Length: 153
Image (cartoon, rainbow, N blue to C red; front, side, top):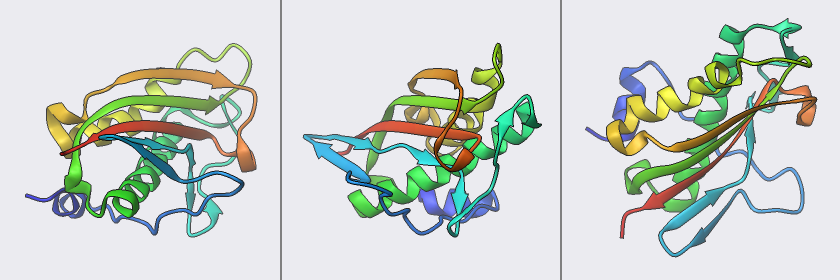
């Protein structure tokens, strides 16, 4: 079953690939590695989850924000590689949570992205990861992720 069919089975749709918001590329390929720029929780140009987790956003809503980020990352993978099925494995996910000072549940928030990658890709979706709380993110988004994937030869 294709990755896009698995997305549909989960009731999810792939958004249009988000454009770069500055002087950078949405992705860079080096050999079989595809480095994805950070993606935020935006859908159709609108922020889906604004504000800090712990004030205005909960761990559960942050989890959903991370899933939106993952879908945007998948859209950028498809734009760069031509197909979501071109991914051999997820290598690394760096997750950033816009959170109140002292927030310690960043891993639970970033699981929104990690869980989706594993649901779609199985063992190949498992990855190394960092999940950190930060004082702010672009457009006051609750979450941003940055991903590295290995593409099939």
